[in-house]
Image (cartoon, rainbow, N blue to C red; front, side, top):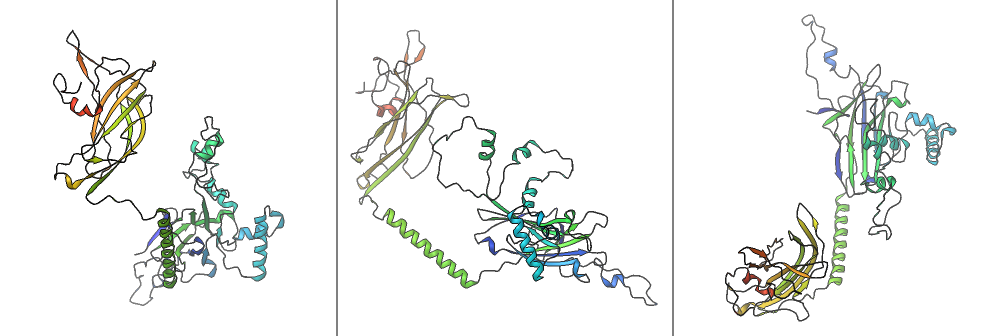
Length: 483
């Protein structure tokens, strides 16, 4: 059963298309509904036989554009096919632009010439259905006069006032992609106009309104009798918005006019765009396929296919990492010194450095914790002959690091040590490592933290970073052979 929906409650539909919007064709069917049309003829004219003196009750038929259009005058119904941004003049515009003094812009003079040409040729194909294109003044007025409620005394909100000068419509000037101004990239004292023009996401949109002049017989051409039948918007990303949605043969929208008579109108919206023929569709598919193949060949010529492959029997490992931040250390001006230890039989390129030092960063309070952000990237390349290693006993490289701080006198302290084993499988993950520091006993029996100052000999510190994993687990007095 087909539904009857009001245009005020018709939901908008969003479509995405890559086809030219100029191919869009919409058919609008408009019909005035009278009480006579709402009842079947055999109900209104009962069979007056001696045996039957009552009116037979019957179920109302479904309201569609086919069975509603019977027994109507020509002025009460109309069907028009409209293209994208196609201009159909209303009776109000015809009466207005007949007067040359009413023309104020070149577009008004163009409309005047077209109206005079239509009157001479008598080729006007619309009476009640007309359109407002993206170039008409009505489109600009409608975009800035929308109210949230139905109250005539609704005060504009703060956001409405701020957004009143923002145009989400067609933009004549386009900024080149990738173009960044070289001066004043950061504006520390933005003006109100600067904020209004740069802090709102504005996508160029073209708008079109399909209207209906629902005035009484012989009294057309009044603005108060104009009603919006359909609103169509198309942005630069190929997103088509239509409100209400296409009805096809499933539903009939309705409009009840204001005034004394309060006429009821039904209308439908159908997409009658010409479908692409199979031959043209195959031709377009082959064209895109050929284009993609050419682009693939172009990329191949740029990249090449002579990639370096590891020798047979060798395992090659690439490590890409980043020292992101340091959290919870006591002192300021931190930096990280890291070192990669390669086990036996592992090799790396001769020009590759196995150690690195980040920049010195001041800390800031983040979530009640001192944090220093480094964002320091690093990468290593290493290989091993896997055939010579026992199965399951392959030793993996270790990454050791030490966190240092620098004071006002350019003295350096050890803030903590840590280590990380290189993963043995391809993976992307974030590691949060714990660090440790050395402690010595004081004569009073209490312990204090000992920071290894490179400029102050005698402090407890690890001489080599590769001993970090052994020191953190060692409980004896001294590491054998490592003082």
